[in-house]
Image (tube, rainbow, N blue to C red):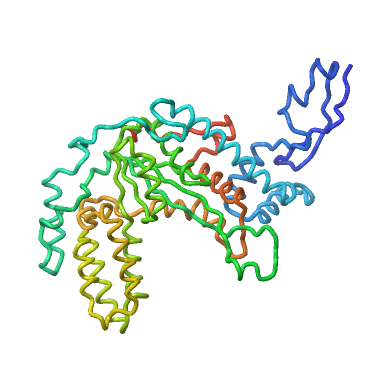
Length: 427
């Protein structure tokens, strides 16, 4: 006997938000139930979301526009003013992102087997510390680049030996895997609105970590709610792309916690180098003029440009000596100068000769991940008046990363992500 189910089956799709009656044949413990055996199983108040809705409402909608504007577009397109509600849309985005993260976590667990990796994805094997010669630029090319740099320099007080002595070797761009990583913070949503709360305690932030992995012309964007989670995904991506034994070159902005986390994660494996982003190094030079020096703008600019010139050639010793030699009448805040000197000393092993690298066509900045920050986080979440929960901010970033990697179709059709750099990248 055919009987209707007591709970209607709910659908959110391209023609609107609607519900219909499903039926069952047989008793409650047997027979055929369309709500379970024919359609996707739903929870008590669950809603089945079609591919159209997930594509246009979540991946192409919420990642670009506010929830309110996305909802308005959806309901106008479907000509259903009282269709999906605002809170339902934001919950759907978080639910979709949670499904993506569960899938990535499962894929990572499959690709990080013990005993080669521990439970956190950290490699437990050791690579040969001697980097193969093909990974480095030919000495003749490096010497030629040094000659070009010095010929363009109008001052004759820099010797070729000083540039050649830089501790960071010049690698071949196609022989290393470049990883750029950064934390992005957005305004955190208040738990309750109390007058004067922001003025007393300041506004906290919700953080998302973004990583950009590149090998040759292929790239992949990863994002998660914390640095350890992203590093685990990076480790699994390298294994999936047959790059787990390649040389790693990290680009960061000098954030101490991030740098320490990277070296701690890959300390057993080795064959990892880190380059300090040139833009952030310049920012420290500007801090010297803005807060540490006094005098006219023109006088400050002379010191800033000289410091930038020394650091562009990777001459940290000279830069520190130049700061120490500043005349007393030019210094406004000595503690600022000490902070900058400490910053240079901490990052000394990660400051290459940017001039030679630029002459060889090598990267000297973390611009790729900064661009990904804008695409997957800042473009959508850093607008006036917006506040985000610790679940909502990473969720939108995850959906935007899937879209950025061009994997929306695979996810909606098969429920899987490629999670791998193209094959030619591993060659």
